[in-house]
Amino acid sequence: MAYHTGVHSKRSADAVEGLLNALYTNRRDYAYIKQNYKQLAEALAYQAAKRKITADPEKTAKVMERAFEKTFKIIDKLLPEVNEENLEVLGRAIHKHTDDPFVVLRNAGIDIEPELEEFRQFLAEISGKKLEETASPAVGKEGVSDSLGLEAQRLLGILSGLKFAGYSEKALKELDARIDELINEKNLELLGLYLGFQRLLKRIDFKRAERFLKL
Image (cartoon, rainbow, N blue to C red; front, side, top):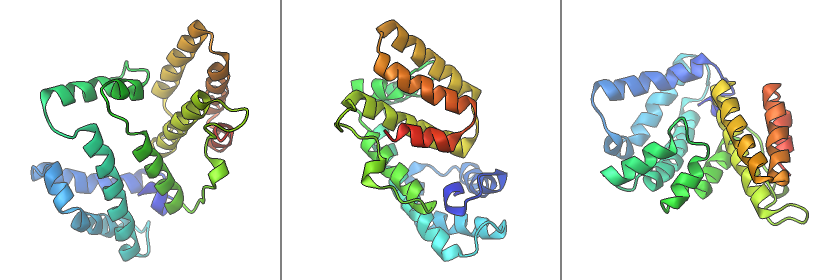
């Protein structure tokens, strides 16, 4: 909603919060959301128009429909079946002490990075930014290693989340932990990437951080 409206504030969050509260109050589960996401997208569009952060409810509803569809892809891959084993893996991946949730997921045979990249491209599209092929981290590009490109891609995903949720001390602490690991591993290539990103993040210079990560 924030990327579509251009309003990264409480008003955008309130539009979504009202819908989530209604779903929770009525004990609606994920299956219900998947089945009724088009009606829910219309409800979100109505809430956005009511708060005067959009002027075209029909367009907003279509954007929210696409947002639901792309989110479903990520959720279905993260939790293909609700059982104890899958919930345990997901719990470890999102735990506050987990440095790299992607490693936890990959070790369990779950790779959501393609879906996350698709979602990032979607966010760029609805915010009016056109991403060129050369703008993405150049995996395999001359002078840029595959690991460096993949790490830059992951940090871009983190940056997108921070731009939506706001500055986060927790994110800085997680970066500090990852930097300590890279120092111990003597991985100077990735260490330079993380230190540069950390410095720009401390300055809350999101635009420059994004340019820095597009190797």
